Length: 191
Image (cartoon, rainbow, N blue to C red; front, side, top):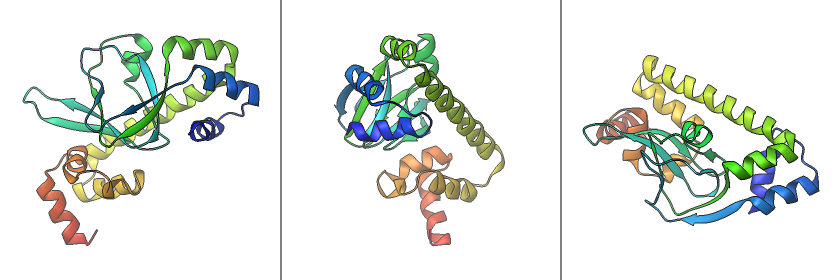
């Protein structure tokens, strides 16, 4: 499956074959069972993950124990609590597998060494972080200004095909509505 991560790097940087080999040599891989937690609040994120197969979610649990989905990470997405990983601070969110998932990953130390040997990787991750911040800002704005129907349509555009793979309650949590309201909304609009 290493071809998928190499194609992902190729979206923003051109790597020589020896650079690809260096990357693959330090990259870890693991399978994560459905419902397994990769990082939880209070833990320090030790890895940045690339989803090869499956789907992860990042969520926040409020003081009432209610989970609020912040982001989904299907195939070809990177997943990480960025603040915890890059600043070595305790995480405030949870990353959990919604499906049996296969990930590739890097530790911060390995990534820093790769940045020194392959400087264009630093450019790749800068672009990745910039795109993630852009997505975060658009999501906040959507939650503040769009209707539930508009947020749902935006979800479908942003995560094509994901609604057939994950529970409706996960989508409802992401949209900030109940599963019953989402079901009603989908029936009304024949979505």
